[in-house]
Amino acid sequence: MDVLLTNDDGIEETGLRALYEALSSVADVTAIAPAEDQSAVGRSMSSRVAVDEHALGYAIHGTPADCVVAGIEVLATDVDLVVSGCNRGANLGQYVLGRSGTISAAVEAAFFGVPAVAVSMYIPTGEVDYTTFDPGFEEYAEAMRVARHIAENALEEGVFEEADYLNVNVPVADDEPCEMEITTPSTVYDMGADRSEGHITLVDRIWRRMAEGEVIDPEGTDRRAIMERRVSVSPLTASHTPYRHDALDRLAAGY
Image (cartoon, rainbow, N blue to C red; front, side, top):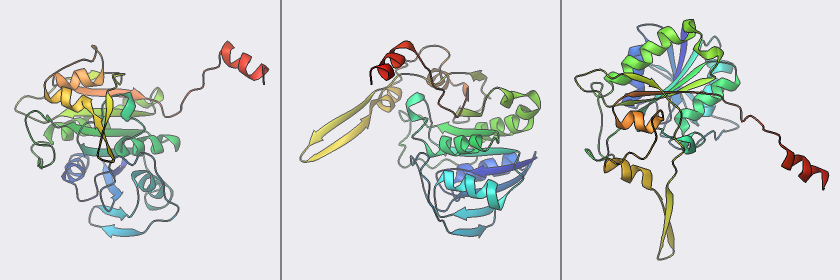
């Protein structure tokens, strides 16, 4: 199996190297990832990017979506699976799906008809300082195990006959392996803004709640699974399915 491995944190990020090692035991892996950090760029795309050869594959001076397009079209044209990650930080909830560069790489692959998996690791912000926490391979051990298991089994099991891509979130590894739960992205949304001295600060209050151990998401959602130390796997589709209804027909008729 040929795997294209990418991320949004940059090709030198430990999480990408951890998945490269894990996936290399079951597949031929080519890393095609941003040369620098491209977190939270969504599906932003460039018209022209520079490319450098790298020990793991290629470093692209562009976004995660750039990496997938360049990879599938030019650099690794026979791809069976795209894996994006492992992101240093979780990607949980419906509202992050269009925001995350990690997930956006998987979405871009899905539009090519290539199965994809986005893998992110939740960092318990109530226990460590996210800005300084630098996880090593040992912290990514659960993510490595999950990525290898999915790459080795998902295609054969027919997972991608129903789903275009999987959004996977894993806890930081400890002595006991986690269980896996199939989830849906949480609909809980708590963005806020504070204005002070000519500036507005945007705040995602969800992280504060999680740091305090507050679980406000119902059973079966990605965030609850992570907060209860289970691996969350959300099967998703890339297309925004249109829904036609009577009110829209009346709107059009009255134009």
